[in-house]
Length: 507
Image (cartoon, rainbow, N blue to C red; front, side, top):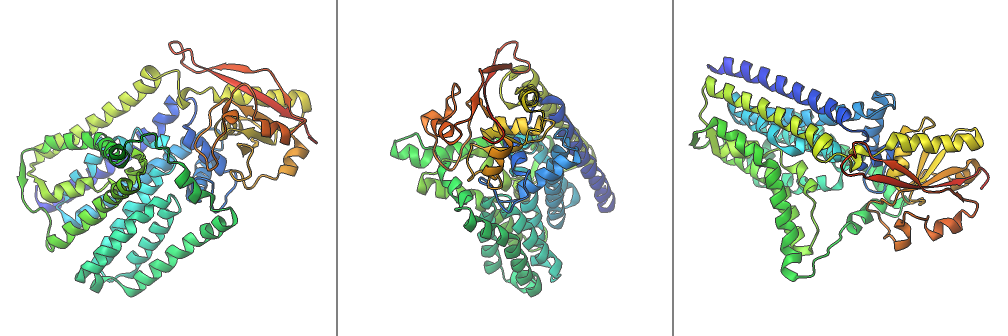
Protein backbone atom coordinates (compact mmCIF):
# COMPACT_ATOMS: atom_id res chain seq x y z
CA UNK A 1 0.00 0.00 0.00
CA UNK A 2 1.16 3.53 -0.70
CA UNK A 3 1.00 6.06 2.12
CA UNK A 4 -2.36 7.58 1.08
CA UNK A 5 -4.02 4.18 0.75
CA UNK A 6 -2.47 3.05 4.02
CA UNK A 7 -3.79 6.12 5.85
CA UNK A 8 -7.31 5.64 4.48
CA UNK A 9 -7.37 1.94 5.27
CA UNK A 10 -5.98 2.41 8.80
CA UNK A 11 -8.50 5.18 9.53
CA UNK A 12 -11.46 3.03 8.46
CA UNK A 13 -10.21 0.11 10.53
CA UNK A 14 -9.62 2.30 13.59
CA UNK A 15 -13.11 3.80 13.63
CA UNK A 16 -14.76 0.45 12.88
CA UNK A 17 -12.98 -1.33 15.74
CA UNK A 18 -13.57 1.50 18.23
CA UNK A 19 -17.26 1.75 17.32
CA UNK A 20 -17.66 -2.01 17.73
CA UNK A 21 -15.79 -1.93 21.04
CA UNK A 22 -18.03 0.83 22.42
CA UNK A 23 -21.17 -0.98 21.26
CA UNK A 24 -20.23 -4.41 22.65
CA UNK A 25 -18.97 -3.24 26.02
CA UNK A 26 -21.85 -0.80 26.53
CA UNK A 27 -24.56 -3.40 25.98
CA UNK A 28 -22.96 -6.59 27.33
CA UNK A 29 -22.72 -5.60 31.03
CA UNK A 30 -26.39 -4.55 31.06
CA UNK A 31 -27.40 -7.86 29.50
CA UNK A 32 -25.24 -10.00 31.79
CA UNK A 33 -25.60 -8.32 35.18
CA UNK A 34 -28.68 -8.31 37.38
CA UNK A 35 -27.18 -5.49 39.45
CA UNK A 36 -24.30 -3.05 39.04
CA UNK A 37 -20.91 -3.37 40.71
CA UNK A 38 -20.46 -2.03 44.23
CA UNK A 39 -18.27 0.76 42.89
CA UNK A 40 -20.99 1.82 40.49
CA UNK A 41 -23.77 1.80 43.07
CA UNK A 42 -21.56 3.89 45.34
CA UNK A 43 -21.14 6.40 42.51
CA UNK A 44 -24.93 6.37 42.04
CA UNK A 45 -25.28 7.37 45.69
CA UNK A 46 -22.95 10.30 45.13
CA UNK A 47 -24.86 11.32 42.02
CA UNK A 48 -27.96 12.03 44.08
CA UNK A 49 -26.27 15.33 44.94
CA UNK A 50 -24.02 17.18 42.49
CA UNK A 51 -21.46 18.21 45.06
CA UNK A 52 -17.84 19.34 44.67
CA UNK A 53 -16.49 16.25 46.39
CA UNK A 54 -17.41 12.95 48.02
CA UNK A 55 -15.96 10.83 50.78
CA UNK A 56 -13.83 8.65 48.47
CA UNK A 57 -13.45 10.68 45.27
CA UNK A 58 -13.46 14.23 43.97
CA UNK A 59 -16.52 15.41 42.06
CA UNK A 60 -16.21 14.26 38.43
CA UNK A 61 -17.38 10.66 38.89
CA UNK A 62 -20.53 11.67 40.76
CA UNK A 63 -21.45 14.08 37.97
CA UNK A 64 -20.68 11.60 35.17
CA UNK A 65 -22.75 8.95 36.92
CA UNK A 66 -25.68 11.35 37.18
CA UNK A 67 -25.45 11.97 33.44
CA UNK A 68 -25.34 8.24 32.68
CA UNK A 69 -28.36 7.52 34.88
CA UNK A 70 -30.29 10.38 33.28
CA UNK A 71 -29.52 8.97 29.80
CA UNK A 72 -31.27 5.76 30.87
CA UNK A 73 -34.12 7.67 32.55
CA UNK A 74 -33.10 6.16 35.89
CA UNK A 75 -34.25 2.69 34.85
CA UNK A 76 -30.91 0.94 34.33
CA UNK A 77 -27.18 1.57 33.86
CA UNK A 78 -27.00 1.25 30.08
CA UNK A 79 -26.38 4.98 29.68
CA UNK A 80 -23.61 4.83 32.26
CA UNK A 81 -21.92 1.86 30.57
CA UNK A 82 -22.11 3.80 27.29
CA UNK A 83 -20.38 6.82 28.86
CA UNK A 84 -17.71 4.53 30.29
CA UNK A 85 -16.92 3.22 26.84
CA UNK A 86 -16.97 6.68 25.29
CA UNK A 87 -14.08 7.53 27.63
CA UNK A 88 -12.27 4.37 26.57
CA UNK A 89 -12.92 5.42 22.98
CA UNK A 90 -11.50 8.86 23.79
CA UNK A 91 -8.39 7.16 25.13
CA UNK A 92 -8.00 5.07 21.96
CA UNK A 93 -8.51 8.18 19.80
CA UNK A 94 -5.88 10.12 21.77
CA UNK A 95 -3.35 7.31 21.40
CA UNK A 96 -4.24 7.09 17.69
CA UNK A 97 -3.68 10.83 17.18
CA UNK A 98 -0.39 10.75 19.06
CA UNK A 99 0.74 7.64 17.20
CA UNK A 100 0.11 9.23 13.81
CA UNK A 101 2.53 12.01 14.73
CA UNK A 102 5.20 9.45 15.54
CA UNK A 103 4.74 6.53 13.13
CA UNK A 104 3.31 5.47 9.84
CA UNK A 105 -0.50 4.98 9.98
CA UNK A 106 -0.29 1.16 10.17
CA UNK A 107 2.17 1.26 13.03
CA UNK A 108 0.04 3.83 14.87
CA UNK A 109 -2.94 1.52 14.34
CA UNK A 110 -1.06 -1.40 15.88
CA UNK A 111 -0.07 0.73 18.88
CA UNK A 112 -3.76 1.40 19.51
CA UNK A 113 -5.42 -1.88 18.65
CA UNK A 114 -3.18 -4.08 20.75
CA UNK A 115 -4.93 -2.36 23.68
CA UNK A 116 -8.01 -4.32 22.65
CA UNK A 117 -6.26 -7.28 24.20
CA UNK A 118 -6.01 -5.54 27.58
CA UNK A 119 -8.57 -6.76 30.11
CA UNK A 120 -8.59 -3.36 31.79
CA UNK A 121 -10.31 -1.66 28.83
CA UNK A 122 -13.06 -4.23 28.37
CA UNK A 123 -14.07 -6.79 30.98
CA UNK A 124 -12.88 -4.78 33.99
CA UNK A 125 -14.30 -1.38 33.05
CA UNK A 126 -17.79 -1.72 34.50
CA UNK A 127 -16.50 -2.81 37.91
CA UNK A 128 -14.44 0.33 38.59
CA UNK A 129 -16.12 3.71 38.83
CA UNK A 130 -13.23 6.08 38.19
CA UNK A 131 -10.49 4.47 36.10
CA UNK A 132 -12.42 4.63 32.83
CA UNK A 133 -12.74 8.42 33.01
CA UNK A 134 -9.17 8.78 34.22
CA UNK A 135 -7.91 6.77 31.24
CA UNK A 136 -9.77 9.09 28.88
CA UNK A 137 -8.70 12.36 30.48
CA UNK A 138 -5.04 11.39 30.96
CA UNK A 139 -4.49 10.12 27.44
CA UNK A 140 -6.17 13.23 26.03
CA UNK A 141 -3.96 15.44 28.22
CA UNK A 142 -0.85 13.56 27.09
CA UNK A 143 -1.73 13.86 23.40
CA UNK A 144 -2.51 17.60 23.62
CA UNK A 145 0.60 18.21 25.75
CA UNK A 146 2.78 16.53 23.14
CA UNK A 147 1.15 18.57 20.39
CA UNK A 148 1.61 21.76 22.42
CA UNK A 149 5.31 20.93 22.62
CA UNK A 150 5.45 20.67 18.82
CA UNK A 151 3.34 23.67 17.77
CA UNK A 152 2.86 27.21 19.11
CA UNK A 153 -0.94 26.96 18.95
CA UNK A 154 -2.26 27.92 22.40
CA UNK A 155 -5.38 25.76 22.20
CA UNK A 156 -3.42 22.57 22.87
CA UNK A 157 -1.97 23.93 26.10
CA UNK A 158 -5.43 25.11 27.20
CA UNK A 159 -6.99 21.72 26.46
CA UNK A 160 -4.17 20.05 28.40
CA UNK A 161 -4.99 22.17 31.45
CA UNK A 162 -8.68 21.33 31.24
CA UNK A 163 -8.04 17.60 30.72
CA UNK A 164 -5.57 17.45 33.63
CA UNK A 165 -7.98 19.34 35.87
CA UNK A 166 -10.78 16.91 35.06
CA UNK A 167 -8.40 13.97 35.54
CA UNK A 168 -7.29 15.11 39.00
CA UNK A 169 -10.93 15.79 39.90
CA UNK A 170 -11.69 12.23 38.86
CA UNK A 171 -8.95 10.73 41.02
CA UNK A 172 -6.10 12.49 42.79
CA UNK A 173 -3.57 9.95 41.53
CA UNK A 174 -3.81 11.63 38.11
CA UNK A 175 -1.41 14.24 39.49
CA UNK A 176 1.38 11.63 39.16
CA UNK A 177 1.58 12.48 35.45
CA UNK A 178 2.27 16.17 36.01
CA UNK A 179 5.86 15.99 37.39
CA UNK A 180 6.86 13.94 34.34
CA UNK A 181 5.35 16.53 32.03
CA UNK A 182 7.39 19.18 33.81
CA UNK A 183 10.57 17.10 33.56
CA UNK A 184 10.07 16.66 29.82
CA UNK A 185 9.44 20.38 29.35
CA UNK A 186 12.50 21.38 31.39
CA UNK A 187 14.83 18.91 29.67
CA UNK A 188 13.66 19.47 26.09
CA UNK A 189 14.68 22.77 24.52
CA UNK A 190 12.47 22.39 21.43
CA UNK A 191 9.42 21.75 23.61
CA UNK A 192 10.06 24.89 25.67
CA UNK A 193 10.56 26.98 22.55
CA UNK A 194 7.42 25.70 20.84
CA UNK A 195 5.05 25.77 23.83
CA UNK A 196 2.82 28.84 23.60
CA UNK A 197 3.07 31.04 26.75
CA UNK A 198 -0.69 31.62 26.55
CA UNK A 199 -1.25 27.88 26.31
CA UNK A 200 1.11 27.18 29.22
CA UNK A 201 -0.08 29.78 31.71
CA UNK A 202 -3.68 29.70 30.51
CA UNK A 203 -3.68 25.92 30.92
CA UNK A 204 -2.33 26.23 34.47
CA UNK A 205 -5.03 28.77 35.34
CA UNK A 206 -7.79 26.56 33.91
CA UNK A 207 -6.40 23.58 35.84
CA UNK A 208 -6.45 25.51 39.11
CA UNK A 209 -9.96 26.85 38.49
CA UNK A 210 -11.28 23.33 37.90
CA UNK A 211 -9.65 22.06 41.12
CA UNK A 212 -10.49 25.07 43.32
CA UNK A 213 -14.10 24.10 44.21
CA UNK A 214 -12.91 20.72 45.47
CA UNK A 215 -10.17 22.32 47.58
CA UNK A 216 -12.78 24.56 49.22
CA UNK A 217 -15.07 21.57 49.70
CA UNK A 218 -12.29 19.57 51.37
CA UNK A 219 -11.66 22.32 53.91
CA UNK A 220 -15.36 22.29 54.75
CA UNK A 221 -15.57 18.50 55.10
CA UNK A 222 -12.60 17.60 57.26
CA UNK A 223 -10.47 16.57 54.24
CA UNK A 224 -12.45 13.34 54.20
CA UNK A 225 -11.32 12.27 50.70
CA UNK A 226 -7.64 12.74 51.54
CA UNK A 227 -8.04 10.81 54.80
CA UNK A 228 -9.65 7.94 52.91
CA UNK A 229 -6.52 7.53 50.77
CA UNK A 230 -4.48 6.73 53.87
CA UNK A 231 -7.02 4.64 55.79
CA UNK A 232 -7.44 2.28 52.82
CA UNK A 233 -4.06 0.76 53.59
CA UNK A 234 -4.47 -2.62 55.30
CA UNK A 235 -1.02 -4.17 55.55
CA UNK A 236 -1.23 -7.68 57.03
CA UNK A 237 2.40 -8.72 56.38
CA UNK A 238 4.96 -8.10 59.13
CA UNK A 239 8.12 -9.33 57.41
CA UNK A 240 10.35 -6.36 56.51
CA UNK A 241 11.24 -7.47 52.98
CA UNK A 242 7.69 -8.54 52.25
CA UNK A 243 6.30 -5.21 53.47
CA UNK A 244 8.58 -3.26 51.14
CA UNK A 245 8.57 -5.55 48.10
CA UNK A 246 5.57 -7.90 48.13
CA UNK A 247 2.87 -5.38 47.20
CA UNK A 248 4.93 -3.57 44.54
CA UNK A 249 5.91 -6.87 42.91
CA UNK A 250 2.35 -8.20 43.15
CA UNK A 251 1.14 -4.94 41.56
CA UNK A 252 3.60 -5.29 38.67
CA UNK A 253 2.69 -8.96 38.18
CA UNK A 254 -1.05 -8.24 37.96
CA UNK A 255 -0.47 -5.38 35.53
CA UNK A 256 1.63 -7.75 33.39
CA UNK A 257 -1.13 -10.39 33.43
CA UNK A 258 -3.66 -7.80 32.31
CA UNK A 259 -1.59 -6.70 29.32
CA UNK A 260 -0.35 -10.17 28.33
CA UNK A 261 -2.97 -10.58 25.54
CA UNK A 262 -1.70 -7.29 24.06
CA UNK A 263 1.74 -8.79 23.70
CA UNK A 264 0.28 -11.94 22.14
CA UNK A 265 -1.47 -9.81 19.53
CA UNK A 266 1.90 -8.54 18.40
CA UNK A 267 2.91 -12.07 17.41
CA UNK A 268 0.48 -11.85 14.50
CA UNK A 269 2.71 -9.13 13.00
CA UNK A 270 5.99 -11.06 13.40
CA UNK A 271 8.75 -11.14 12.34
CA UNK A 272 9.90 -7.80 13.65
CA UNK A 273 12.49 -5.42 12.32
CA UNK A 274 14.36 -4.11 15.33
CA UNK A 275 15.14 -0.52 14.47
CA UNK A 276 14.29 3.06 15.31
CA UNK A 277 10.62 3.40 14.53
CA UNK A 278 10.16 7.07 15.18
CA UNK A 279 10.30 9.84 12.65
CA UNK A 280 12.53 12.94 12.96
CA UNK A 281 13.67 14.03 16.45
CA UNK A 282 13.44 10.39 17.57
CA UNK A 283 15.40 10.93 20.76
CA UNK A 284 13.06 13.55 22.21
CA UNK A 285 9.94 11.69 21.15
CA UNK A 286 11.07 8.39 22.61
CA UNK A 287 12.03 10.25 25.77
CA UNK A 288 8.50 11.64 25.86
CA UNK A 289 6.95 8.17 25.62
CA UNK A 290 9.20 6.71 28.31
CA UNK A 291 8.76 9.61 30.74
CA UNK A 292 5.00 9.96 30.45
CA UNK A 293 4.27 6.33 29.64
CA UNK A 294 6.33 4.65 32.35
CA UNK A 295 7.13 7.49 34.78
CA UNK A 296 3.83 7.44 36.75
CA UNK A 297 3.93 3.64 37.14
CA UNK A 298 7.54 3.81 38.29
CA UNK A 299 6.57 6.51 40.79
CA UNK A 300 3.79 4.36 42.24
CA UNK A 301 6.10 1.37 42.63
CA UNK A 302 8.94 3.46 44.06
CA UNK A 303 6.83 5.11 46.78
CA UNK A 304 5.16 1.81 47.60
CA UNK A 305 8.57 0.27 48.24
CA UNK A 306 9.66 3.18 50.42
CA UNK A 307 6.46 3.73 52.43
CA UNK A 308 5.16 0.12 52.43
CA UNK A 309 2.01 1.01 50.54
CA UNK A 310 -0.50 -1.66 49.67
CA UNK A 311 -1.10 -1.39 45.92
CA UNK A 312 -4.18 -2.39 43.94
CA UNK A 313 -3.89 -3.29 40.27
CA UNK A 314 -6.56 -0.78 39.25
CA UNK A 315 -4.31 2.09 40.38
CA UNK A 316 -1.98 1.35 37.49
CA UNK A 317 -4.64 1.05 34.77
CA UNK A 318 -4.80 4.76 33.80
CA UNK A 319 -1.06 4.79 33.07
CA UNK A 320 -0.71 1.80 30.74
CA UNK A 321 -2.43 2.95 27.49
CA UNK A 322 0.96 4.09 26.13
CA UNK A 323 2.23 0.52 26.16
CA UNK A 324 1.65 0.05 22.44
CA UNK A 325 3.37 3.29 21.48
CA UNK A 326 6.42 2.41 23.56
CA UNK A 327 6.68 -1.08 22.07
CA UNK A 328 6.28 0.10 18.49
CA UNK A 329 8.89 2.82 19.07
CA UNK A 330 11.49 0.07 19.62
CA UNK A 331 10.15 -2.91 17.71
CA UNK A 332 8.55 -1.86 14.46
CA UNK A 333 6.55 -4.62 12.75
CA UNK A 334 7.33 -5.19 9.10
CA UNK A 335 3.86 -5.17 7.57
CA UNK A 336 2.29 -6.13 4.28
CA UNK A 337 -1.37 -5.61 3.47
CA UNK A 338 -2.03 -9.31 4.05
CA UNK A 339 -0.27 -9.30 7.43
CA UNK A 340 -2.16 -6.16 8.43
CA UNK A 341 -5.43 -7.93 7.66
CA UNK A 342 -4.33 -10.90 9.77
CA UNK A 343 -3.60 -8.53 12.64
CA UNK A 344 -7.03 -6.87 12.39
CA UNK A 345 -8.68 -10.29 12.25
CA UNK A 346 -6.78 -11.27 15.40
CA UNK A 347 -8.03 -8.12 17.14
CA UNK A 348 -11.63 -9.00 16.26
CA UNK A 349 -11.06 -12.57 17.42
CA UNK A 350 -9.67 -11.52 20.78
CA UNK A 351 -12.60 -9.12 21.22
CA UNK A 352 -14.99 -12.01 20.57
CA UNK A 353 -13.11 -14.29 22.98
CA UNK A 354 -13.12 -11.68 25.74
CA UNK A 355 -16.82 -10.97 25.28
CA UNK A 356 -17.62 -14.68 25.32
CA UNK A 357 -15.40 -15.27 28.35
CA UNK A 358 -17.00 -12.35 30.18
CA UNK A 359 -20.49 -13.69 29.44
CA UNK A 360 -19.63 -17.23 30.55
CA UNK A 361 -17.80 -16.05 33.66
CA UNK A 362 -20.75 -14.02 34.94
CA UNK A 363 -23.53 -16.37 33.84
CA UNK A 364 -21.85 -19.72 34.43
CA UNK A 365 -18.47 -19.95 36.13
CA UNK A 366 -18.98 -17.24 38.79
CA UNK A 367 -22.77 -17.24 38.81
CA UNK A 368 -24.74 -17.01 42.02
CA UNK A 369 -22.36 -14.76 43.93
CA UNK A 370 -21.02 -11.22 43.90
CA UNK A 371 -22.63 -7.99 42.88
CA UNK A 372 -23.61 -9.15 39.36
CA UNK A 373 -26.20 -11.55 40.79
CA UNK A 374 -27.20 -9.53 43.84
CA UNK A 375 -31.03 -9.57 44.19
CA UNK A 376 -31.19 -5.78 44.14
CA UNK A 377 -34.66 -5.36 42.63
CA UNK A 378 -36.22 -7.92 44.96
CA UNK A 379 -34.68 -6.23 48.01
CA UNK A 380 -35.72 -2.75 46.85
CA UNK A 381 -39.28 -3.80 46.04
CA UNK A 382 -39.66 -5.56 49.38
CA UNK A 383 -38.31 -2.66 51.42
CA UNK A 384 -40.47 -0.16 49.56
CA UNK A 385 -43.59 -2.33 49.97
CA UNK A 386 -43.05 -2.60 53.73
CA UNK A 387 -42.87 1.18 54.01
CA UNK A 388 -45.86 1.80 51.76
CA UNK A 389 -48.05 -0.71 53.61
CA UNK A 390 -47.44 1.06 56.91
CA UNK A 391 -47.37 4.74 56.00
CA UNK A 392 -48.82 5.15 52.47
CA UNK A 393 -46.29 7.88 51.69
CA UNK A 394 -43.16 7.89 49.51
CA UNK A 395 -40.02 6.47 51.10
CA UNK A 396 -37.68 9.45 51.32
CA UNK A 397 -34.63 7.97 53.05
CA UNK A 398 -32.82 4.64 53.28
CA UNK A 399 -29.93 4.28 55.74
CA UNK A 400 -27.24 1.67 56.21
CA UNK A 401 -24.35 0.20 54.24
CA UNK A 402 -23.80 2.37 51.17
CA UNK A 403 -24.10 -0.70 48.98
CA UNK A 404 -27.38 -2.32 50.01
CA UNK A 405 -28.88 1.10 50.75
CA UNK A 406 -27.73 2.24 47.32
CA UNK A 407 -29.36 -0.76 45.66
CA UNK A 408 -32.62 0.05 47.42
CA UNK A 409 -32.38 3.71 46.47
CA UNK A 410 -31.76 3.03 42.78
CA UNK A 411 -34.31 0.27 42.20
CA UNK A 412 -37.07 1.56 44.48
CA UNK A 413 -39.85 3.41 42.65
CA UNK A 414 -39.66 6.10 45.38
CA UNK A 415 -35.95 6.86 44.72
CA UNK A 416 -35.07 7.56 48.39
CA UNK A 417 -31.87 9.35 49.39
CA UNK A 418 -29.04 7.29 50.88
CA UNK A 419 -27.75 7.97 54.39
CA UNK A 420 -24.53 5.96 54.06
CA UNK A 421 -23.41 4.16 57.20
CA UNK A 422 -25.63 6.54 59.22
CA UNK A 423 -22.81 9.08 59.05
CA UNK A 424 -22.98 12.69 57.82
CA UNK A 425 -19.29 12.42 56.89
CA UNK A 426 -20.29 10.12 54.01
CA UNK A 427 -23.62 11.78 53.17
CA UNK A 428 -22.99 15.45 53.74
CA UNK A 429 -26.21 16.56 52.06
CA UNK A 430 -28.46 14.58 54.40
CA UNK A 431 -30.45 16.63 56.91
CA UNK A 432 -30.84 14.38 59.96
CA UNK A 433 -33.77 16.39 61.28
CA UNK A 434 -35.65 15.93 58.01
CA UNK A 435 -34.78 12.23 58.09
CA UNK A 436 -36.39 11.93 61.53
CA UNK A 437 -39.34 14.03 60.41
CA UNK A 438 -40.17 11.94 57.34
CA UNK A 439 -38.87 8.61 58.60
CA UNK A 440 -36.57 6.08 56.95
CA UNK A 441 -35.87 2.43 56.37
CA UNK A 442 -32.64 1.09 57.88
CA UNK A 443 -30.98 -1.87 56.14
CA UNK A 444 -28.01 -4.07 56.97
CA UNK A 445 -26.75 -7.07 55.00
CA UNK A 446 -23.39 -7.22 56.77
CA UNK A 447 -21.33 -6.02 53.82
CA UNK A 448 -19.46 -2.75 54.32
CA UNK A 449 -16.73 -1.35 52.12
CA UNK A 450 -13.65 0.66 53.00
CA UNK A 451 -14.28 3.92 54.80
CA UNK A 452 -12.50 6.75 56.56
CA UNK A 453 -13.36 5.79 60.12
CA UNK A 454 -12.48 2.25 61.25
CA UNK A 455 -15.29 -0.24 61.78
CA UNK A 456 -15.97 -1.66 65.20
CA UNK A 457 -16.88 -5.35 65.40
CA UNK A 458 -20.40 -4.44 66.39
CA UNK A 459 -20.90 -2.38 63.22
CA UNK A 460 -20.70 -5.24 60.72
CA UNK A 461 -22.88 -7.83 62.44
CA UNK A 462 -25.80 -8.85 60.24
CA UNK A 463 -28.02 -9.89 63.14
CA UNK A 464 -28.41 -6.43 64.65
CA UNK A 465 -27.82 -2.77 63.98
CA UNK A 466 -24.81 -1.12 65.65
CA UNK A 467 -25.38 -0.18 69.28
CA UNK A 468 -24.61 3.49 68.61
CA UNK A 469 -27.27 3.54 65.87
CA UNK A 470 -29.89 2.12 68.22
CA UNK A 471 -29.03 4.79 70.80
CA UNK A 472 -29.26 7.57 68.22
CA UNK A 473 -32.65 6.33 66.93
CA UNK A 474 -34.50 4.82 69.90
CA UNK A 475 -37.87 4.60 68.07
CA UNK A 476 -36.43 2.26 65.41
CA UNK A 477 -38.64 -0.80 64.92
CA UNK A 478 -36.61 -3.85 63.95
CA UNK A 479 -38.21 -6.51 61.74
CA UNK A 480 -37.25 -10.17 61.41
CA UNK A 481 -34.36 -10.94 59.09
CA UNK A 482 -35.47 -11.47 55.50
CA UNK A 483 -33.85 -13.94 53.09
CA UNK A 484 -33.30 -13.15 49.40
CA UNK A 485 -31.60 -15.73 47.15
CA UNK A 486 -28.98 -14.55 44.71
CA UNK A 487 -29.81 -14.87 41.03
CA UNK A 488 -28.38 -17.95 39.29
CA UNK A 489 -27.45 -19.52 42.64
CA UNK A 490 -28.41 -23.11 41.82
CA UNK A 491 -24.89 -24.26 42.65
CA UNK A 492 -23.75 -21.73 45.27
CA UNK A 493 -27.08 -21.37 47.13
CA UNK A 494 -25.90 -17.92 48.21
CA UNK A 495 -28.51 -15.71 49.88
CA UNK A 496 -28.72 -12.19 51.24
CA UNK A 497 -29.70 -12.01 54.89
CA UNK A 498 -31.22 -8.58 55.26
CA UNK A 499 -31.97 -6.88 58.57
CA UNK A 500 -34.63 -4.19 58.15
CA UNK A 501 -35.55 -1.45 60.58
CA UNK A 502 -38.35 1.11 60.30
CA UNK A 503 -37.84 4.60 61.65
CA UNK A 504 -41.39 6.01 61.70
CA UNK A 505 -42.05 9.60 60.68
CA UNK A 506 -41.44 11.90 63.61
CA UNK A 507 -38.93 9.43 65.09
